[in-house]
Image: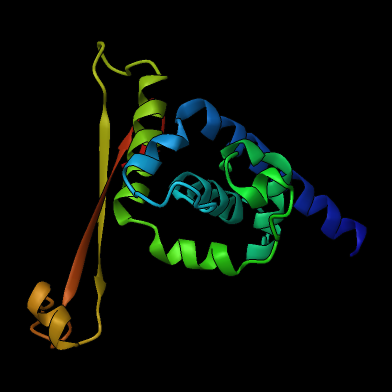
Length: 180
């Protein structure tokens, strides 16, 4: 890797470390385990999968394999101590079990994480205007393929084309810059 490429990646890796430390401060990931239930000895329970997903998404070009290795190196405390593979230090860094766990992750657990992080960020910032929270709204529409299911769920474009339109809105809390 060229020096210039290494320099451009280094800040993003440091940003990822900061994000993961902030995540630890903002939420107790183990609360997700009560939302997305798994077996007592399950290694990749919701808290582990969520941490690894955040790690994978926040790191520059992190593969599933790298994310699993980072989990084993930096966050073994999330792993169940009563699991024989974990306690015997024989847990594989292959991605098969993590990949299956990602597909089993309850959507409610992901929603819980997003809402908990947003709420924590908002609560940690001062109100913007006369002790009130100020939100800005932004929206857009996206054309969807003219599939029957999309036509049933979304109205057609105003120009009476056959393509349905999904309307998206996001609210930003001004003080914390949190998107909801």
